[in-house]
Image (cartoon, rainbow, N blue to C red; front, side):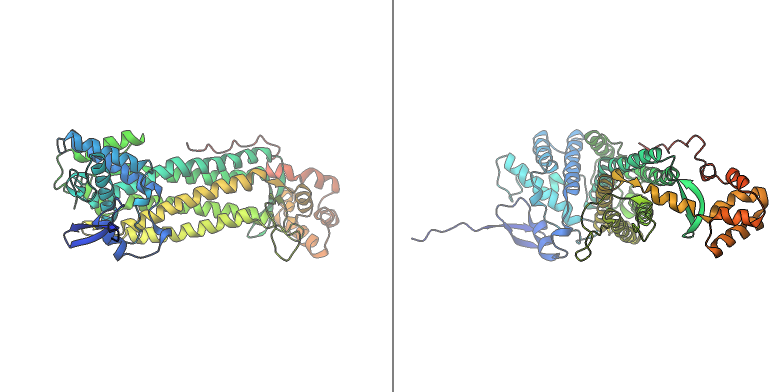
Length: 481
């Protein structure tokens, strides 16, 4: 007789009826319906490790809070906590197949976590996955919770983790490398430029110190967004009232989350705002946009200073990482700078999405939660990756093109600025115009003018003194920790 093979599916039921779920999967009916109903975006838009880890953490801490408050028996708490811990550790990442584009409250993703943790808990208890016994995904894993407070809690937990543990370390390293370069190149005097035209001289150290200050301010701006993210919506349940949750559940759950992460999470002061608005995420995204703008400015400055090298400015020399052209031999491009600028404009786009989504709260719920979280996390990870690569492959090897700097400085007409206190603005301007019009040096034009002697010119026009290079250098900006 032909062998009868068991069906690769098991039958599960929910409020809409029966649905076939792959037998070996830990997810259940809600996840399966989401897979069928939202075939949008593909693998690129699946939830990544930070979100899955945060889901496991929130469910683990909720179970412990329910146990402490007498809502779940110790046995169920133990099974749920162990299953949730395994989710946190990445053991079941393949069981989280859903994409960003789903219901705006993240309900399907919350249920995905409930089902995976419940079915794994059932396995730990010796039961059959899908049976909902002895652990139920809604009644036990989701006890005292709603998707409407779980998902925004996950949003904050995941975002804080990526900012504090990934982005700020990468950004601080980049800023620190620039600060070291500012000190190293403090004596190098070069032509200043305003309006893309020659201007008064300054030092390369001063130029770079401006970049360091921008990065330090960006770190500070991002850090200032963190207190809003430390407030957690958990305990608000469906609309912010805490329906079906025991008194104090949000506070106890937040304490457990803080203990697990070592970060100062607290229960949100106003759960109605925590569910219906995501101003903290919008503020965080704005801080990321500001950082992107700083990086864009710095990267553009670097590639302009390095342009040429013979037919451009050529005052900085960037590391040559790879050939720059498939047709022009010997060409090397500022590729790390270009990568950073592309990341910056992507972050600008992400921020527009977050800002618009954040404005779309209606009554007691903002239903754009998943897209807000996705774009904020993408911006964080892109910026962190860009900072690490930029620091390692570009900034660390940055060097001045000293011969080119001296050549440009020697021909600068804006050294005439030093003459103004001695002969007046109008006469100094005429000397500069004469030098430009006749193609001679500023010194030649000054002596020919009869307004001063060569000796006086040499005494008054000293680029190092104009740039302040003869003075003790300003200390680099202190980087926020």
